[in-house]
Structure formats: structure tokens, C-alpha cells
Length: 509
Image 1 (cartoon, rainbow, N blue to C red):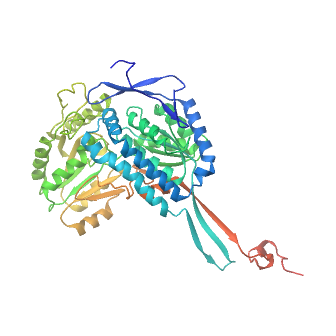
Image 2 (tube, helix red, strand yellow):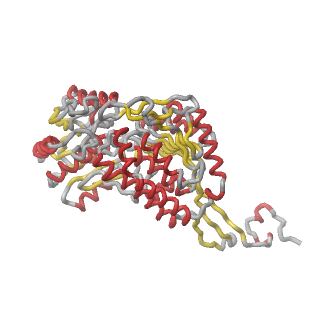
């Protein structure tokens, strides 16, 4: 494809396609082939200033900020319609920029993105934007309400692994609450996000939703430090999340963070091994392991350790690693060449520390995708909880299988990590599973499966996996300020009991 035919993805500011102030564009690379599939505008601080100013102007419009929930619901439903009407185009863009498989994006991501907007379209009608408190007679009769109001201009920073889904997880609740937005998607997987923002301009007022692609060091930094940005929502690594949090503190921005994970799954001796093998590998091979909530540590009781390991290897051998656009493909590539090498380094570190590669552990060769960044489905045996692969987020198709003797030991190992995003239990004893779930320090606990995320259930982390919740009505909570409004009914000063504390002569002749 010649440069003149190459699709170009500009910034979207105030409802219009805009060239970046620097004039700079960057190639977008298909990680399955290594080929360039488009060029995206690279914004900078000046572009952020322009987008924030437009978002601030849009927020000042009372017609948007104070729109009744029933009307806002219609807009959210309209957003869902736009997504479904353009599903094929969006899915293809997502596949070619991120390496996500056709099966996953068409079968999970696009429906979930539309469902998220529709779910919030219903939730917004019942959300307690105004709550009346009961009248209290003492110290006098006062009518009090609690109002939930939009925060203002929201800077939304998304990661590269699930571009459209992460966009929706932030944009939908921000719109539901009545905020305006400047979105910064990851610059390596931006095409589907830019196109969706462009499509949504047809149902949103100008300036409500803007997108500025660029590096974290320029655009992300400018957003998180900007005096006119009132809230930041960030999804990404824990290390960058800490930096974003520090930046937000400069102007006391509201901040929510969805960060890394190291999901432990505890397999009890009575678990059904077939179910565990398929479910646990779904938990770590989905999106080639490039998901923060992946189940990357499998804690297995010693009585079934060898039998389950054999089953994991058997199921892994049937995984089809291939071109993401092929419906037969179950697992695609790593997002970039550098990330591919990072995953391979983790596998080597496991070998160096005494773990055994039960299967995989090498580069995967895919016919027709010789320039891609594929890693074989990998199961590591004889891992201990102090190894690097058990402590750090690999973000690849690598499962660490760890042996335990007692349930208390397994729970302690599961919690012995800086992260707390996801955890799981595999057992036929569902009562016991619920008890174990109470002891696991994670924002989501899944029993006898993995990735059981739904758009009406809260999603977020404990510990260094971040704070704040996404999905459903719980996500709206992160995009509102709380205001108490009280009205006094007593008109005679002498009858106001508290006034007498200061006005000691009140009521005296």
C-alpha cells in the first residue's frame, strides 16, 4: 500500500477532524504481520490545550450538564446503535491494530461495548442523582438533599490491549454522569478508537467527546497535569499509574486507576480436571495473555498436581496460534516486537530460577505471518511463589503452576502479591468456595471459570491493582461529585436553637 493510499487517523476535537499541531503522524503496525495498516496523528501539549478548552466550553453548556436522565439515556442508546451499525468496520480496525482475534472481538468485545452503553442507558434512569434525606426535628426542621453532579472535564487514558472495550468502560459512565471528555488511547493501537469517536460525533454535542492520540510523555502528561482537567481515569501498568496519581495530586484531580494483576486460581483436590484445564487456560490464553485480569498463577493441590499438569499440556497442544483474522485462530500475537521479547525474557527467567517448561516457551511460527510477534502457549511447572514469573505481570500466554499442600497455604500464597485484581477457586464444593472467596484479596473472585466479567458488575482492584470501579452503576460513582443542599423552614431567628450559641441576646426584650 502506497503512502498516498494509507489510511490516516487525525485528532477529533470539537466534533471535527483536526491535524496535529506538530504535523506528525506515526505508523500503526499490525502485530500479526509487521505491516503498516495506517498512520495516526501524534498530538502534543498544544493539542491537549485545544481539546480541553473545547471540552470545558461544552461542559459550561447547561443543556448538556443538566440534561435529564431520561434524555441522557436516549443518547447512550444511540451510542450503542452507532456501535452495532458499524460493528464490522470497528472489528476489522481492532483486529489489525491490536492483534485481537476475530473470534474474540466479534464474539465478545463488540457486543460487550454495545451492551455497556445500553446497560448504562438503563442505569442512568434510576441512578440517585438526587436523594432526599428524611426531615429531622432537631435542632430544627430542615429539608436536605444529596445531589450527584458531573465532575467536569475528564481525561480518559486507555491501554493498548482492548482498545474499544476500555474506551467504552470509561466513556460511557463519563457521558452518563454528564461530563465532557478528552480521550487519549494508546498510540500503538489507536485506529478503532479514533474511528469510533468520529462516528459518535453524530449523536453527541460538539466538544463533549474529543480524542487526542499521542505519547504518554506528552499527551498523557499534559492531561494529568492540566489545570482545567477535573478527573483522570487511567488503565495501564502499575508503575505508570503511580506517576499519573502523583500528577493528579498537583491540582487535586479526582483519579481512578485500573492497573496490573497477577490473578491466582486455587484448585482444590475435588475439582473437575477437565473443567479446570479448559477454564484456566481460557483465563491465561485469551488475548494471548495480554489482559490485566488474566489468571497467571494456578495453585494446585499436591494430590492432583501431576494429573492436572498433564491435562494442561494436552489442552495447550490443541491451541491454534495464527492470524487473528482467521476464524480458526484461538490465540494471536504479542502487541509489539519489544513486548514479545519481554515475554520471552520472563520465560527464560523461569528456566534460570529452576522452573520447568512443560510446554511451549518458544516463538511460534505462523504461516503467512512471518513478521508477527507470536509466542507459543506456555505452561511452567515447578514454579514457586517467590520466582519472578510468579511475582510480576508477564502479560503473555504463560501459566505458572504452583504446588500447595494445605488450603491455608494456598490462600496465603494467593494473597502474597502486590496485586489484587482477580482471583479464582476451582472446586465442586460451592459453599467452601464462597468461604475462600471471602479470604481472597481481589476485586473480582471467580468460581469454576475465569474472565466472568459482566457490564452490570463492578470491576476493579485491591492493593496496587488500583482503585475505583468500572462497569454498571458502580462506574457512574467515579464520575460524579457529591453535594449536600439543605433548606431551612424556620423563619423566626429566636426559634433557631443553634443561633443562640452566638447570638446570646437573641429573643431578649
